[in-house]
Length: 171
Image (spheres, rainbow, N blue to C red):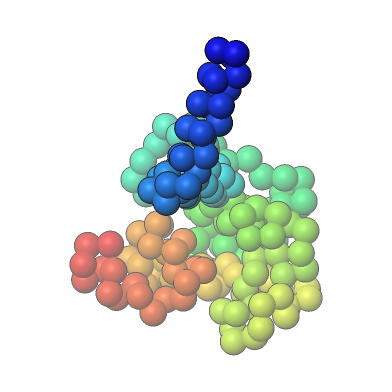
């Protein structure tokens, strides 16, 4: 009999908790926070947070330990050619890493550079032309960013409209 009473008391306690709206609010908040933390961790790792820790470098960001695929490495001669033509030959490795991030070397518009010449995303269908346009655009934003590699990388994707604003406020 005593066991039945204990089970009944537990059930009544559980029902009381489930009927309390405050308990549901706390549970919802905990679930939301856990989800946000998990999502932030996923994004951080997906965007290469691990490589930043492994590189052991901070500052300019022109050097690091990024690994690029064979699909990207095959474009190195073209990248070198257009980088030298545009005065950014010392950034061939960084441009390779950009291609790895942009397309993994698996898209025809390997540098995702169509938008930099006013075309819709992915409109360039010749990898060499994509590299020619992309490297030229990178050289232009590097010049506008006064050699600030981080600002140039941001501008490559976001557009160069905010370079002046960022430089006036210290980067």
